[in-house]
Image (cartoon, rainbow, N blue to C red; front, top):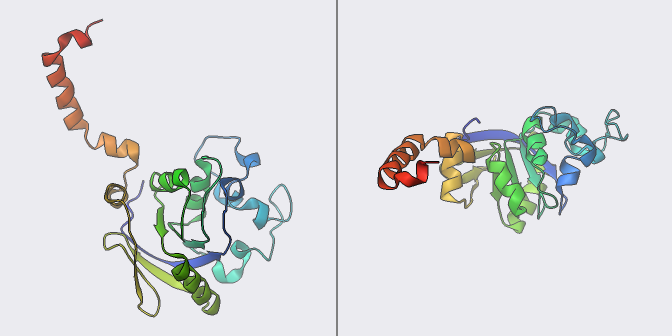
Length: 206
């Protein structure tokens, strides 16, 4: 997983609340547990006019020319609710989004973002609505995100600060998911096992 340190990207607005994981990655596309190929089906129910996902809906934000190449998703409250499917952050990351900004996230989805190299940023509702208005009024609207400083800088140099758990922050800065973080302590784990074999050898016989 690539580390997330700083990122400047085009903002894509999706001003809807309670966007659930079945809308992020519809169930009909969950026929594989391979972590590839989900970018094209992100928001498929809204993004396409047909069930198969072959006829783009010109009114949906991801299909509009001004938002092509977007890498920061701006969304409404309770983003990622519903089932715990990890295919949802897979699709978001594979489409090209590195950061999601919303007033709140569903807990499981929020945790899954960190394990897939996505930074979920929580800002208050009023600030998010201000950003929606600025994006709508400004073609090519970008934000600069600095994870170490925990800041987001707007085009007019307004600095927004966000809170984040220190453990999750450090793991993302180093590009470590839960397994990677555990493996980064392999020396300590090996030392503990060696010590325990000496302290309680009967545990290791069998």
